Structure formats: structure tokens, C-alpha cells
Amino acid sequence: MNRDRRSKKRNTSNQSSQNNSQGRRRDENNKGRRQNFKPTPVVSLEQIHEEEAAIRTFKAENQPVCALCGKPITDLASAMQERGGGDPIHFECAMEQLSSSEKLDDGDKIAYIGQGRFAVLNYPNIRDVRTFSIKKIIEWEDRNEKPVWRNDMAELFSHVR
Image (tube, rainbow, N blue to C red):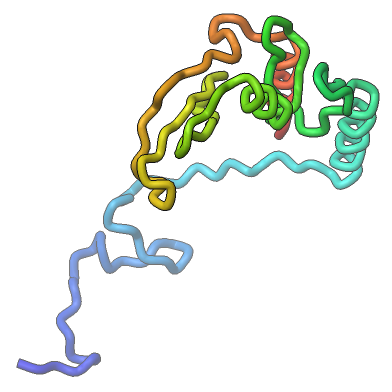
């Protein structure tokens, strides 16, 4: 029973085919419900420029220096806590310090596994990085103690809109 487009049966119930006052069909799932429109707060371009300038001056004044290499830390989000101290150091400096202090066998690599911990990974087949075993876990940062500079950084991120 083939029908063309004009001869299709239409649903004649009042709720599904009746147009509302704005000329739109009602959605079957939202019968009778009104959508609450919540406008987003308007931020002027001047406010954005002022906030960006304040962030730049804050970063310039409060840029920490790596305790190991003495260079400024530009990406504080990827910085690590110095071992035994609370000062920030570059992630790369922490990796270099671990690489020099750990004795690695063939197929071993050092990797960051999260929560302030590193691990010595052993790859039985160097070409296949999907299979590995963890030989040793190195606790770099104390999980229970957060340094002051990290709390300051978290506070700055919480103010971002």
C-alpha cells in the first residue's frame, strides 16, 4: 500500500498536531511544560581585558623559581613539589632527578602515574608499549599534604568564569 506524501494519515489528536500560539508544534515529551530561559551573564570586553591584565601582572610578580635548576616555572599546573621540601620544581627536573638516581635495566622506563607518584615500568617487548609491568612505585609527593603554592593556584582556577 504505497501512499504519496500528501495522502499520509495524519494524527488528528489535539495535543500532538495542534500548533501553539507561536506557530510551533509541541514536543511529545514536553507536553504542557514551559522551558525556563536563563540568560547567561553578560561580561563586557573591557572586563575581560582587565581580568587578563590582572592575571598577567599577578603571574609576572608571583612567578616561582625551580629549586633544582633556578629557572622560572611558567606552567605551574604541571609543576611538582620538591622532594623533602615544599617548593615547586619543573616536572622535567623531577624526571631528570629520578632518571639519575634510579638504575634502569633494558626495557625499563620511568613514567608518571598520577597523584604525585612515579613508577618504573618494564616493557618485555620494547616495540609493544601496550604490555608492561610495574616494577617499582616511587612516592614523590605526600598525598595528605598539599603545598601552599598549589592551594593558591587552585584558588585562582576557581575564580575563572
